Length: 297
Image 1 (cartoon, rainbow, N blue to C red):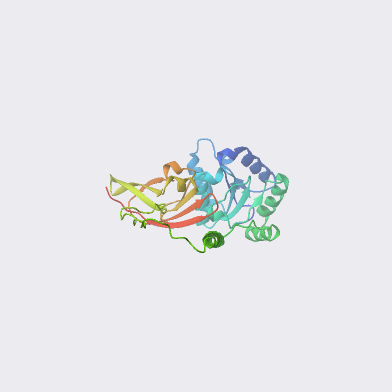
Image 2: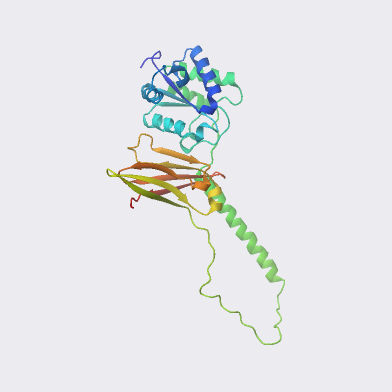
């Protein structure tokens, strides 16, 4: 595909329409061959068909990152499709937000500090004959924001826990050492009664992934997958990402800020498979689980 024929698809949240349209018009004025729904869907043409066709024919996928777009199911579906189809991904940071797992390792073009500077860099990327090489050059010039790995966060957590245990042991030994010669109390000796076998320690339930299902005929099932945990734990979760079977057109489903609904996601299908689940906590932790779907009345 030649430079003049290369198409750049712009994906954005409706909340960010003003910024997306301005960016699209400025890029087009600079010579970029962009496609954005509000400028390029012809009157009378079905919007969803036009978007699907543009996604299929584009060779570059530009995603506008914002607090609204990373929570948008449509934007995440478009991103998952572009990634699966091997499109060149060009992330643009419109405002600071918590990036989904599969976007955290990609370098972005920062528009939060200067629109003009961001536009200049973006024009250089889109006007390059080899966009992948241009993106690599951009990454070499711009330091990547460090995202702490899961292993590093787990190490810090374990180290902190050990330190607390050492402090608690030290305090205990200080109090015990104050009484070197205990005095035997007068009067009858009282023996402590062992705890009843019916008593048990109260422990928080671990995170679990479960699903419900209902047969709807023609060998198909409606099903809902959700997170089971105590209310306090659910409040600590920010987003849950469900990765469905690869036969789904957009297999990545992301649910954010819905603790009272147990971060549930509902769909339908005819076969069972194992769902991979990424649970993102508000403190930055990520827990990975797997859940084999079970269909029954």
